[in-house]
Image (cartoon, rainbow over all chains, first blue to last red; front, side, top):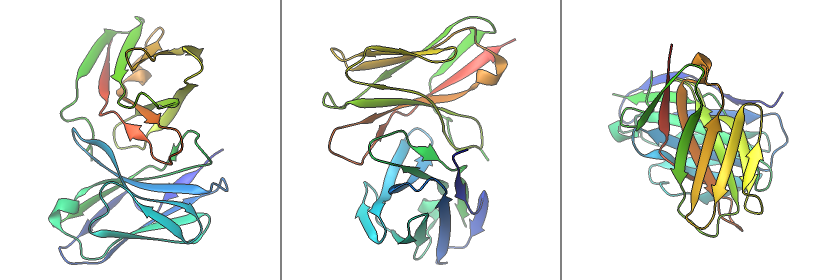
Length: 111
Length: 112
């Protein structure tokens, strides 16, 4: 069965900390995505990657960076966490323009 | 904790009835559409998809209808069950882009 695994379900961090969110997919997908999900706003794209070491900014990249050193792994980095980055973070993957497979999400709280 | 659905429209249906959830999509050029189900505290799960060369597609207990004239997508769930209670949202994929555009969702409540 298809699997997208996010390393943490819940994280609590302090303002100013560097935060790493990890995502691994086992489907050999080229495309991987990071979204954040906030009440009433739907899913907003932070970054996506269409190949190893390739990345493109999404709609809300400010305050975030990403890393894709291997095809199966896509990491989201909050360089200096702020309270307005408290959110549910969702990783997804797909091949071509096909359905996205999502991970279970990471609920991040920044205090 | 739940971070989804605090301000969502809600559809309440009796167990066993049919449910219809609607979505207005934004880009008339979009050629691929997906419905997702998201239960509390979980990631979205794929339900059904449809491409723009079709206007109807059926799955197990679910049907998606696409009306390109008015940019409208609907999800019909037959014989709704308690396990169908969740937030449902649509996604569209314009051609030539990796990006997907998501609706904000509808909460479905199934009444026993």
